Image (cartoon, rainbow over all chains, first blue to last red; front, side, top):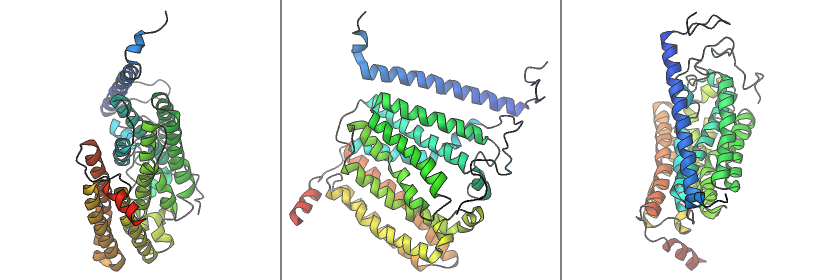
Length: 56
Length: 327
């Protein structure tokens, strides 16, 4: 069975739809990476060196 | 005036969710967030942050600004979900992603809801919960009060609903200081008073569209003549209001000059809209006011930004001294 063949509804993606899907997936990956980077930057900005001063 | 159609549901649009293949491009999904409105929100919020009397770490400020923009974009997606039926009937909005069949209504709803919650929660965690509460109220005001209630019910829809677009400077000040002051409230008032003449100048030439969609916009409820009078009245109130930041010490000499000249130009263009009521001359006057109104708001806020952020301002104490001398 081809990868993009949906067994339930028989939908087969056109090359253009496959390209769109790939672009959407890349955009989601970029958004996730940006989210991680932002949380890291905010943590450093808010806590600074205090992030190391915690009870063990 | 409430449409018999249930808003928020597909209205014989090609975007029916049944057996649909996800075919929207990244650009279609970004369009859901109304990028032009977002850019205005980012800009006015940035000015609100810069003029706020307080200090904030640049990273926290930048991320907070981004979260305010995400909240605005999320409310735009909720608006597009709710208004998909009327968007499909108007030429100005028929190419939006949902009526064009690129994105489903349920996708827009999911994105709008999840990003609304995320933007508010993260703003609360990163900045403070007062700012987060204000952002939540702004999203609620735009998506529920304006889109779901006012827009299809009263011709005052964009007058009251305009508050949603005016809140960002207040949210931004709340991010920096944890509270709001007269400084950001006057910026709120300027955007609030600017919205009716700006939007009605556009609505005058699109009144047929709104009529067809059953949206009670001022030109197709009160008539074009009454709308022209109201545009003039709001502009006559807006122009002096635009100068008030100078008298509050929020703007310096440059701001005083820019706000007086651009305010006078707004009045001249509003008078032209009032006087030219027929044919191509009327359309030209409406387009001129619509176009300049965008530049007007940009000039006021850009001048405040230049004076505060780049140290180009002088004479901040002149306005308050003039006021205290008069009083």
